[in-house]
Length: 262
Image: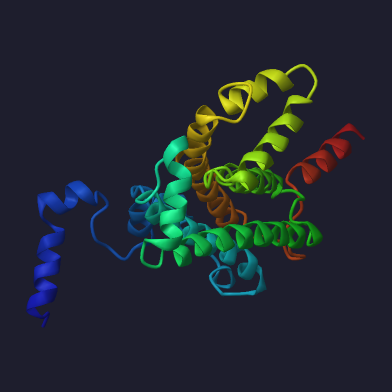
């Protein structure tokens, strides 16, 4: 005999409010489980079925998950740092000094953000090297390899744009040298240099643009490509090509066409 709680849950699942949110309803069949995933804004990114070996923790996960963990740590510490920072020339350096000497645990918070950024760059490169060594750029995973390269570039841009925010001598001259290198690019160098800095030299406009890039545009871009990256890992059956997997779909088709011509 079902308990009172089970009866309540079953009754709740038959209500109009519940069915308006979860349209597939309750059920243990394969169809109900597939509909529950396909009609959810969060779950539809994942396949309806996965192999057991795909959810097991293996050596593949170490570098990728560590990189994702450092990114989440950067997001948390970055939001906390935004509470004490103003992206303006008179105030930016003073805010960094206040974080170091006035704010409780401010120096720890800033150093945690800084060293997490260094760790993320290192782990992203290590992850890419391992994936390249294992040949995961080959079909049918070439699209996910391109997404990973884009994520690596976004990681480097996040590190570069954050370098200016302390607004000290090291940050000022480092960005000056880097932006002058970009100005040396033929044809589009000068225009890109002006667009990047909002002028011809590192000033208040550059600080504001780097702040918007570092705190809004680049993190949102990283989240978008991270979702696609993780989704394709599940869809492709993992990062690496295994011997038991069939080769690219185009190869047998080419063989069939060759036989037909004969």
